[in-house]
Amino acid sequence: MKKPSDEPDELLAIEQLASPSPSQQRMDVLYMQQALQLAHQAGKLGEVPVGSVVIRDGELLGTGMNRCVMNHDPSAHAEVLALREAGARAGSCRLDGATLYVTLEPCLMCCGALLQARIARLVFGAREPGTGGVVSIHEALRLPRVNHHVAISEGVRANDSKALLREFFQSLR
Image 1: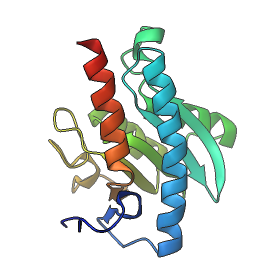
Image 2 (image 1 turned 120 degrees about the vertical axis):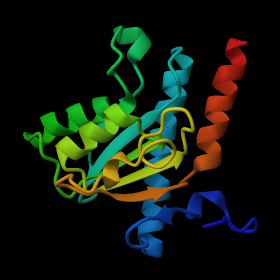
Image 3 (image 1 turned 180 degrees about the vertical axis):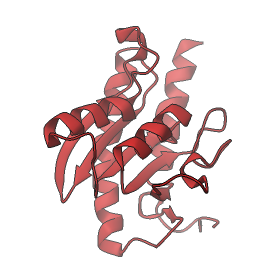
């Protein structure tokens, strides 16, 4: 679906199962703003600026920002850290009914974590053409033999996510 140039970026998302209602789209923008704030913090700390939040029934269960460099841990992606916190807060590794918001398309590892946590819905900002496991290089959440499926919305605040990443990598040059 091509984005009409006259519509604001933050109200657009491509839903691959069922289109979210206008009120859900507004909530998606608000929750993605929280993820963007975390991404901005990660960038200030020298991490790739990616942020994530987990929401269930309007409650914030977990937050995460990339901490791979700081933690010396290749698995310390924003999504994984948000899922760990959400699981601890919920008292369960299963997060049925929860939505994970993340500023950048999850990689294969993070897609596996989403499936294991039984996340109901994924909302992401920008695509990741090099390692994206949702739509860019793989469709890990759409494998036919997987016993759990995740609703996917993409493009929420994508331009803001891309700008954060662009600024971060330009500052390294």
